[in-house]
Image 1: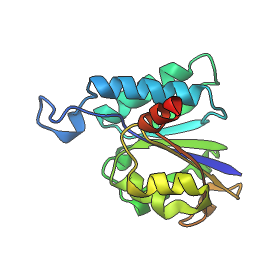
Image 2 (image 1 turned 45 degrees about the horizontal axis):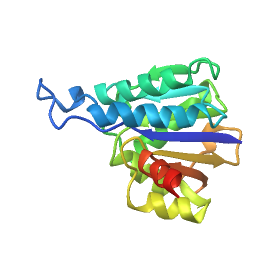
Image 3 (image 1 turned 135 degrees about the vertical axis):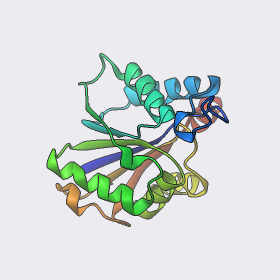
Image 4 (image 1 turned 90 degrees about the horizontal axis):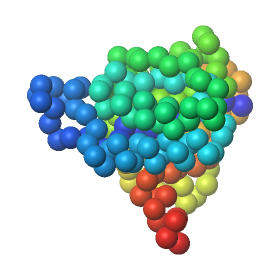
Length: 180
């Protein structure tokens, strides 16, 4: 069994001072939401063994905040910043996921961007919890986390429509659940 966690970066400023999209930073809400999803992850093991992060400032900041929330509660995962995650489409993201077969973690997290991450989540889903599938169908929002299990022991065998969507959570869904 292999587990894949897809985490979209948190909410960002509209424009970076440099004018470059890659330099956009998290805004106040982004910091708060990343901490909230990080705390949720920290209390819902199992944790990722390896993390692939887009080098965009907003993705790196999201990972730093999530990682901080997990410190002391989980073994430290190996982290790689991969330029190919920035602007990647689902096929490129799948290729990156399959690269994990070299180090073969049991649980892999990607921290990246839409539209690629949302499209990847939709195309990986073969089965899963119906409410989670409905919630994910519209969007993978900022700080949204989609978790998939694959009935394989080889990342090279991960493919579209073969994932079981185990859960989908976001700060907004967490707020709704705490009110309900």
